[in-house]
Image (cartoon, rainbow, N blue to C red; front, side):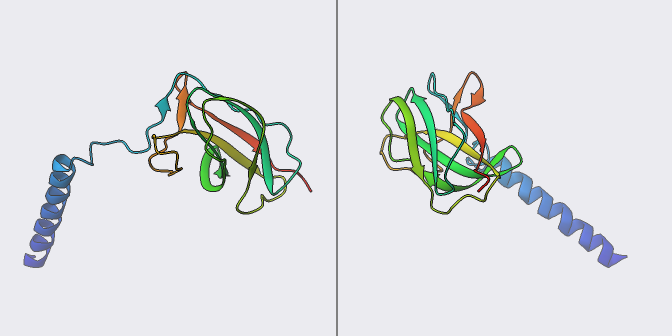
Length: 145
């Protein structure tokens, strides 16, 4: 019985310590990877013809990048391709070379990111773009090859 009482005390102290950490920690109140509204942006992707590259169109309201992701359902997963730095403007038939080929006939996701000002893509600081309260992304299928 004494051992059960000590176990309960240890659990209560551990939970109290965790709660204090969450309450006091400045990073705990931050929401990381929050999309940024830059006033516009969209992506369109025609039917893809290559497993090694992705072609799309992207009008950018602010400088940034387009990333190509594997998908987990409707959510972007691992990045398998990143465009070069893109100044604000309209890009038709933008070709992004992939770091690994896509699997045939699978869903992939293109995601628009805004530059944090250093013109170097870093996934944790160059955040996704949102417009009209939605993240600017497009799902597409890789070729059936």
